[in-house]
Amino acid sequence: MRVAHSEHVRPENYRRFEREVPAWYRDAKFGIFVHWGAYSVPAWAEPIGELGTIDAKTWFAHNPYAEWYANTIRIDGSPAQQHQQDVHGGAPYDDFLDRWTAEDFDADAVLDLFRRAGARYVVPTTKHHDGITLWDAPGTDGRNTVARGPRRDLVGEFATAARAAGLRFGVYYSGGLDWHVSDFPALDDMDFSARRPVDEAYTDYANAHLDDLVERYAPDVLWGDIEWPDAGKPAGPRSFEHVLDRFYAANPEGVVNDRFGATHWDFRTSEYQQGRDNEDDSAWENCRGVGYSFGYNQVEDASHYMDGPAAVRHLLDVVSRGGNFLLNVGPDSRGRIPELQRQCLEGVADWMELHAAAVHGTTVLDAALASAGEEPWVRWTRAGDTAHAVVDAAGEVALAADPARLDVASARLLDGTPVPARAEGDGIVVDVPAAKVPGPVVVALDLR
Image 1 (tube, rainbow, N blue to C red):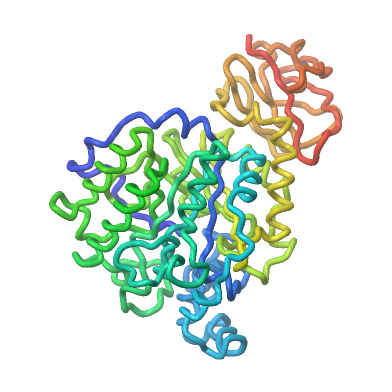
Image 2 (image 1 turned 30 degrees about the horizontal axis):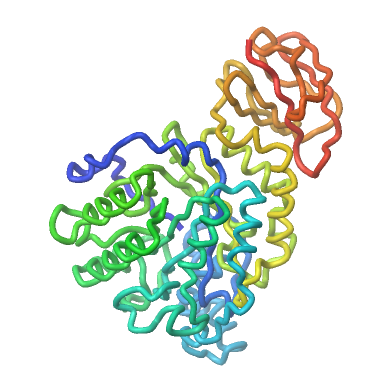
């Protein structure tokens, strides 16, 4: 969940980090987010809808994010609080850490699925807002997955498997919220300003964690969330600058998102429907779950989930507008990818096996050449001198495309099969063949 901040200009002490975004990130287009924690044991939330479409008070009392369970059960009168009492007897949240087994987690198999789905990078949570770390982080006094619960360095397993699969590796870290080390009332609206730790002690704690993650795992992405403690923003011994210096020294091609507050970022972010104003001409990334939650939510069913074709359409919508898509999966407490999430990823994998050329390494096609449509659904990408029409329809489809700028005679599928096409008025009509796999069909046309 992103917290909007008004400062869109980097403070002076962070401007030295400004640079071109590395090509690997811009070309990747697709990554996988993984939210996994003790919250996968209760795995409970109300699937009320997408972030950015529901008023804040309703959102927090009926939070569809299962990973926020530790907060939602503290909101008096919330259904989650009642569920915690009825099902778990009002047990302390940390009981879930000891019940989190991860016994079926196979990092290599999970990362192979992500690779087949066409992801180029993976970003697992290393510490979410509940404060539990997925590695033996300094200062956690055993409240981590190495000492308790799974008794495994899950961050290390993700990192090793990601690189073995040829994927870039990132780390999510909740710097702005930690419900274990702070003693604030439950969050029940979007004003986090007075309910997040900002002091020097917490800054030292969080800095030590990021330094340890950089030293141990040399991540390609630092993915912060909510904010960064205020004591760590100005220049000085606790400044986030020092974390960035170590990060970029360890990985000169690393990238940082915009959720470390008014400090530094390489790319902006949106989440479901929130933060859409960040989807501009700069580097940006949209993230969302397969359903309405990031952490696994056993209440969700197929009516709340995207299937493979829906995820492909979302991916192509984002890519066609110049962004990256970070699609989240939430394993269950045993470490399995839930079946409906797996079906979604398998559907994306089937589509990407035939059509990845219309995604990876592409750029935005100039709107003067062609434009998107909704009925039928059409999106465009560009690779060199080739335009890709991504069309979710079959039969004759009128494309809003300039026949003087696109070579109608060159219309073809990505495997080279010719596709009948003709200029008609100011547009192009293409006879789109039936899809070989569920999802849209890609028709390539040469630019004149």
